[in-house]
Length: 261
Image 1 (spheres, rainbow, N blue to C red):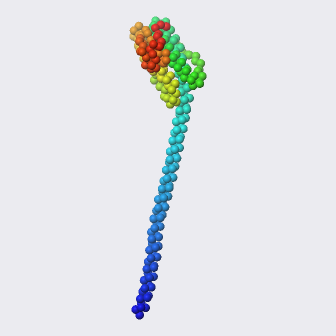
Image 2 (cartoon, rainbow, N blue to C red):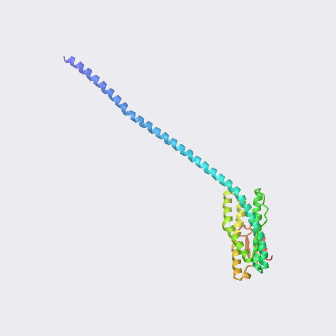
Image 3 (cartoon, rainbow, N blue to C red):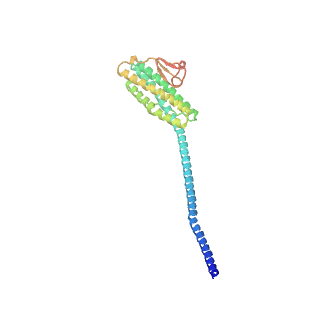
């Protein structure tokens, strides 16, 4: 009888163990499934992020490319604009040279010999600037425009005021702007020519202002009676000349001396 009871008990135990094992297997499978999904999600997220980064990198590359293109266009435009500016500067300096020569004659006629010498020296300097600008155009293969100077000669006082206005514009606005464009273009010849004129015009402005004050104070005879002009850059000195030009380093021995009309 005991043997009969043992057999069913053994069978039941075996069945129970089998069921429990099956249950654990299903549970493990059910528990592992979410982990696998989590890994898949992480992988998908990583791929998405990688894709987004790639898009960003492409956008960055495109932006950089566009910026380079914009820079190239800007440089190309600057090269064209520089030559246009040199043409404008050539016209301005050619006109100024003729105008100051006429102003010189007027000042001499009015009895202001010292102011007449200043205008003559400035006229020579402006002609040097014009020739420098012309050389830049020729080196660039650009035709030099034909200039017919237009101006009117008034009283010496008005002529000085006009000269001050012109030199102030060139020294504070025109040449600084032209130099900025030329630097962007990388046109070294233009930069040199423009810089020569720019630095000289700043000195001319002061000379004209001093002459106007002297004219107003009736002390014209105290003004310089000798001027020196650098043949390279037009730099102008009063009374004495240095051993070398302060702008172009040209030897003072080569300076043009203005003591008469």
